[in-house]
Amino acid sequence: MDIAELKSKSVSDLHDLAEELNISNFSGLRKQDLIFRIEQNLLDSDVVLRGEGVLEILPEGYGFLRSQDWN
Image (cartoon, rainbow, N blue to C red; front, side, top):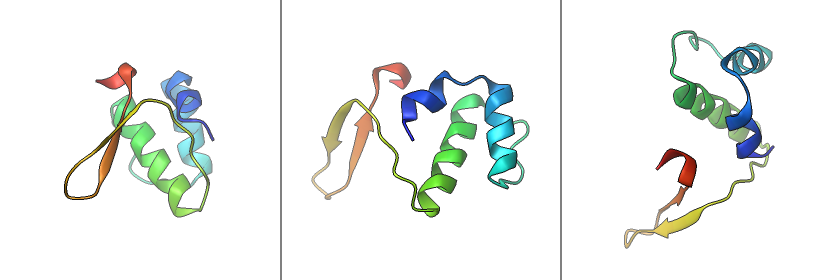
């Protein structure tokens, strides 16, 4: 699934997807937090997520994919 596709969905569509994925306690979340919960669920289910942005790798060895949309 493409991360940009998730970002383009309405909150109502994201709520529907969260219900389909059996995600609990999602009502009241901000759109960004709801997308993050959905992404976590998909990754736990071994679904591949695709995204675009600038990858910032820290000296500690982990990194962040920085998107212009949310930075």
